[in-house]
Amino acid sequence: MEVDARVIRRGAWTLPAAGLLLGAPWIKPYFAGSVGLSGMAGPQADPNIIDNKTWASIATSDGYALFSATQALGLLSLLFGMFVLYGFLVGGRSPHLALRALILGVAGIVPALMMLGVLAFAEPVLASLYQKGVDVCSTAAFSDLLPTALCRWWWGSLPSAVLAIALYLLEFLIMVILGDAIWRSGRVPRWVALAFPFAYFGCIAITPVMTLIGGFLMVVAGGRIALELNREAADRTSSHDALPAALRT
Image (cartoon, rainbow, N blue to C red; front, side, top):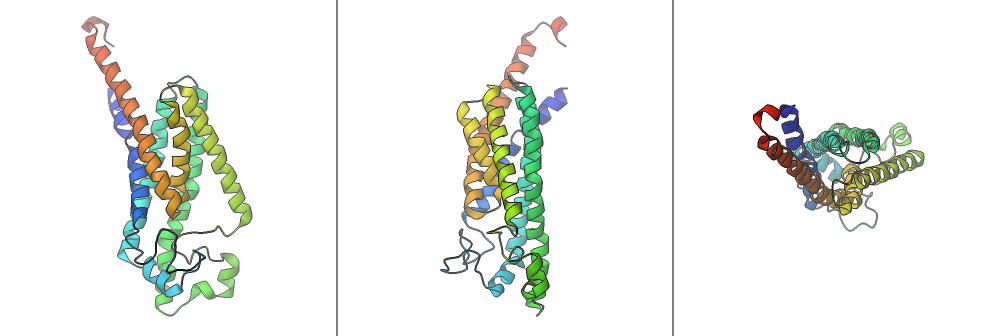
């Protein structure tokens, strides 16, 4: 049990770590060159408009691969952090809500990991083919299947309106359940219950401004949860050590 407690205490820091890994790279995307936070390759009004040559150069760069790896580590840290958050909330006043928060929190991260997988692995392949003279993105069959979804360095819009609505509804439900579970647990200040859902949403959005803001909020809100969890663990350890040896279990 002591080993498990140490794992949970240290694992709590995966929440602020996830925020840092996901948000910090968007301050200045080190793979994008002239492409800024709005997704523009120049002064276009529409961030989805980016010439294929610039897109291919970005998607095949070493910086893009490093960026994708950083985002993947961030999402995996957030995934592990959700289990730590469950272990923290289950000891509060509403343990039944903690399980709902865990299930929905994991369910929200899975589509983000799938999207990141496409951005990290499929796009470089398509970009490499484009640089070799094979413009897959302009073919009629490809455009009908996934219009503009893959041939961009980030998904400014989802290919299906129905899918977008379903994901937004899922994310809204997750935010409500997460906030309610943290609020009712009574284990952290209530501002954390307000900030954490927005931090979570921003972290799984994988869009420039949202992920930058969400990452910063996750560092703050997730860090507060980690501090509280470690403080409570330290108090329990001190109380246990103060007991007579015969009463220790």
